[in-house]
Amino acid sequence: MPSINTLTPYRNISNPLYIVAGNPNLDLTKRHNLNLRYNTNNMDKQLYFNGSLSGDYTVDPVQSQTTISNDLVRFTTYSNMKDEYRVSANASMNKNFKLDSISQLGVNFYLNAGHNKNYRFTDGTLYKATSQNYNLGPSVNISNQSLRLRLSYSMNLQVAKYDLETIKDQRIYRNSVNLSGFIKFFKDFEWNNDFRYSTNPQVDQDRFDAHIFFWNSSVSYKFLKNDFGLITLKAYDILNENTNVFQYSGADAITSSESTTLTQYFMLSFSYRFDSFHKNGKSHPR
Image (cartoon, rainbow, N blue to C red; front, side):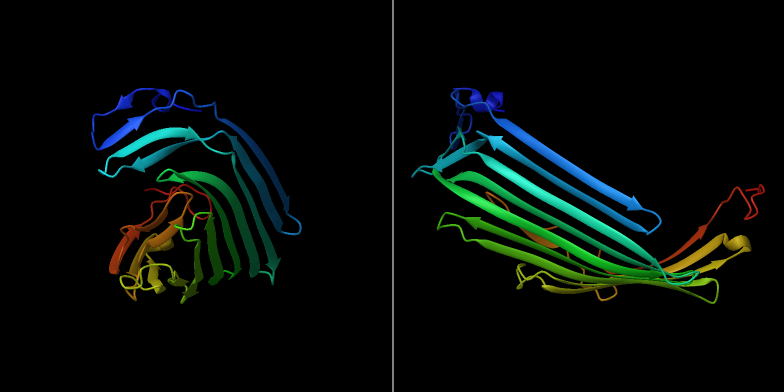
C-alpha cells in the first residue's frame, strides 16, 4: 500500500538537483497470494518428493517515476501502475538404491521455474518487462564406508524481455559441473576433493574468465587413542581461478556484481575431540 512519503502532496526541495513530490491521489494497492505445497516420503522405496506452487497478483502497485530536465534536475513522483503478477513452481525428487550390504546409490533432481510481469517508467515512458527464470540440477552419488562420490550439474537461465526499443532483451545463463567426494585408505587417512567447472559467458571477458576451473583438496589423518586427534592439510583453490561475478536482469535494472571471495591458500590444522562416552557407551574422563 502507498506509504506516507508517496502520498504527501508537498515537494521535498532540500536537494535542488533532486526534487521529490508525493501523489495524494494514489489508489490503494491490493495483493492476492496463493501457495500450494505437496510432499511425500516413502521410506520403504526410499523415494522422496517435494513440490510447491506459489503466485501473487498485485492490483494498482505503486512505482516511482523520474524525469530529468534539460538543466539536469531530477524530479521524482509516484504513480499507480498496471496490474502485475508473479508465478513460481519448485519440485525436487530423491531416490536411493541399495547396491549391496554397505553401498548405496542416490539419484537427485530439482527444478525451479518462475515468470514475472512488471511495469516501470524510464524518463517518463511506461514500459512492460517480463522475465522467466529456470534452474535445474540433477545429481548422482554413491557411498559406502570408504568411498563417497557425488556428480552434479546445475543450470540457471534467465530471459528478460522489454517492450521498449531502447532497452535490449536479455538472455543470461550459467552452467556448472561439480565432482566431489572422499576416499578413505590405510584405515586412518582420508582424501577429500571438490572439483567444479563453471561457465558464465555474460561476464566482462576483458576482466574475468568466463570459464572457471575450481579445485579444493585436503588430506586428513586420524591418530591418538580412539582417533581423538585429527591433522588436516587443506589446499583451497589450487588452480587459483576462483571468482564471484554474476549478472542479473530485473524489471528496471540490468546488474553485474562482483563480491569479495576467498582466493588460493594452504592450511595445516590440528583438532582434538573431547568425548564424554566410549564407543561402548561408558563414561570417559575428559
